[in-house]
Amino acid sequence: MIRREVRDFLERRGCPQDELVLTEVALVEACNNAIEYVADGARHLPIIVEASCPPDYIELSVTDNTAGFDWPKQTALPHEASESGRGLFLIRHLMDSAEYSRGDKCNKLVLRKQRRHKQRS
Image 1 (cartoon, one colour):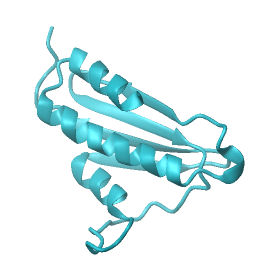
Image 2: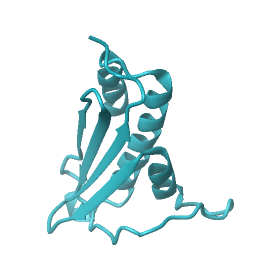
Image 3: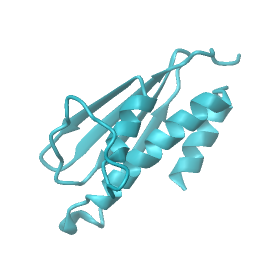
Image 4: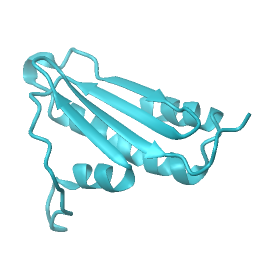
């Protein structure tokens, strides 16, 4: 499972538990959206997840095959009875930055979290 692979990758780079939890939740939300909103004719195409972890930050990217959407300037927590809408809110509040680029055939979400704890030698 990609969530576990990314978590293991970040653990090997010395990320502490609090950073692991925040990035893991954001990654799961991003992947859930990529799966839920994939275009019918693109279900066979892969969702690409990449992770990097230099000493100062964690960066995750999710490339999907959805029709894409207009990235909102702001997100609010939806009403508690709402069935959807929490993913973007969580991503924005858990990560330090989230950039979305919409393409003709695929889209890319790049998430970044500054590291408070430096990488172990």
